[in-house]
Image 1 (cartoon, rainbow, N blue to C red):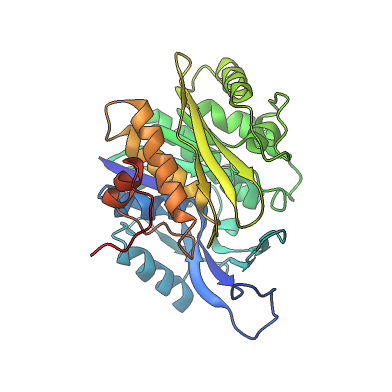
Image 2: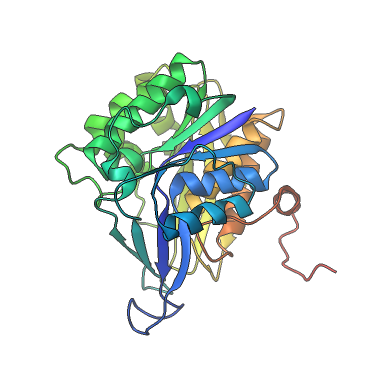
Length: 341
């Protein structure tokens, strides 16, 4: 089975650790974007992963395709069009200084691509699982229309659809609220992935959860999942990530999964000395998709996703560069970090 993800990949420019944007004359240049990050994770785990996007027909677009191919991602579905390469800047946080992201992606190639630009018969050839996020419909009105096309066409073909709700307040600027769009899009989704804020801002469903306290009451997340599943009977399950932010460097990390019949809770990891948390949610999504399609039970799938994402916090860049064996070692309790010889 082929796994397809769809969204925008950008040039990522990161300030050196401990420095603010333009404090020095250097940036670390890589690529990154929610759906591309998931495709890389799936390819690293040995799955047949493909990525669909629209890139500018220039050397930056060429280099982006080459980078994805390095990880074994199928890039044959990538289209080239008018517009530019989106860019985002990362200022790494430390201690009480939070990380910051600045987007520069207006008029990117995918933002200006119009409905009808993508041949969905070709895009969905041999595809059994499709993944999208709430970022794509936030980019522009035409990207929103493409996102809606993508899930409608996927369901016409009986393809499983997963969606990371991913609320990005700095992107919803073309006149529609996130909830106007996402409440409709989720009607075509089988597996939802989110944190508490994503659910509140995109679906306008909430429970009394204090996400600022650093301590999370998991029972309230069961109630939140129950509300979402009741509102969207098409959903087979919802996974909610649980991040306890003590500081920019130290987070508690866990997740839960609700399939309407059982509520699953993962092991909790305390992550100290975080290297790069950008892409952490995408690494969870990639791990969950792999786990649900590999293991016989949802508990193991959830544990794989949480462990994979835990490891991502120690890797610079958007992409999670770990293998299945790396993740399974951590799942088995080997979190010592000792040198392996």
